[in-house]
Length: 50
Image 1 (spheres, rainbow, N blue to C red):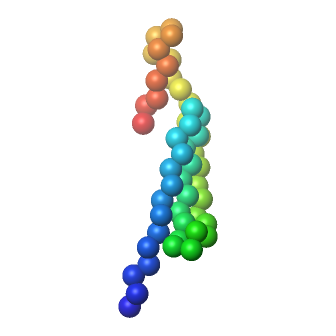
Image 2 (image 1 turned 180 degrees about the vertical axis):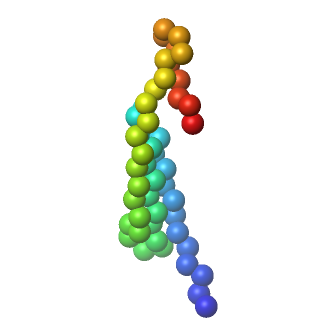
């Protein structure tokens, strides 16, 4: 049995996290994204609760 190899790419921006999986030929296998919001526990102190 041949083992397949994949590449995972992750993009974390200011409001969305995206993840993409590519096969060895560079073809997209799967793509997902999730939005998130910044929290402001104190004025001028934005943060994210993972």
